[in-house]
Amino acid sequence: MRPVPVVFHLGPLQIHTYGIGLALAFWFGFKFLARRLRNNGYEDAWLSTTFVWVVIASIAGARAVHVVANLSYYEAHPSQVLAIWNGGLSSFGGLAVAIPVGLYSAHRRCPELQLVEALDLVAPVLVAAWAVGRFLGPQFMTAGGGKPTNQWFGMYYAGQIGKRIPVPLIQGVECLAIFGILIWIERSLGQRWITRGVVASVAMGLWGLSRFFDEYLWLTYDTGTDAVEIASLCMFAFGSGLAYWRFICRKPIVDDRKILA
Image (cartoon, rainbow, N blue to C red; front, side, top):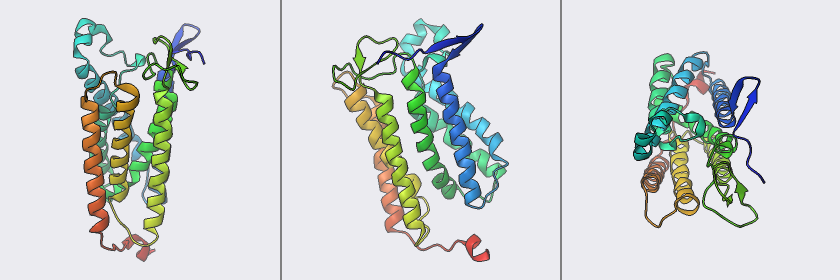
């Protein structure tokens, strides 16, 4: 398969395929989270403002971490610092900035939504939206592939020579699998007791583990351990430990909203 065009034109307007993929991922995440809020008895009118801040924070954080991690390149090419349409967004940077900003904004605009419940509600949304973003974002950007390969599943990417491991597609499938696990946990545990924090913790652990193997197997070109792998393992350890603690130390919690209903 030949590379998908990363840029096309509508008259004088230049459109970047990567940007369209990111926009669709954000739109999907917004709609999905609004639905989950309504299904759990919360208003969603406040979400639009919060989501604007989340989008800004995620892009700013993701780009900042990417630039810092590749500082030597951007010192030599300062005009490329803001060129996000060419790719170059750090997953960890986006999460590190967007999640606190989103939680703070949600607390101000919907104070009845508790922190732990907000994390449980948003975790499956993040994973599902990440899958959409992997399928429609990095898949269609310059240099979006992984290590070179001659296998049948290899794909051609703009800006890279030869076939590459289709890492964005692999990551999309991984995120869909994690999403399925989270929804199963949510539905199965929720029928017997409310175990707040387990869904978010499992999401953190599984995503960190998958991110580590993506980096180690498909993306890293040397035998050393890089910062992404270390951060992924830390996320896996923390998420797994927190999920274990929340599940083992659980106490049945009565949902007052269901009683009052």
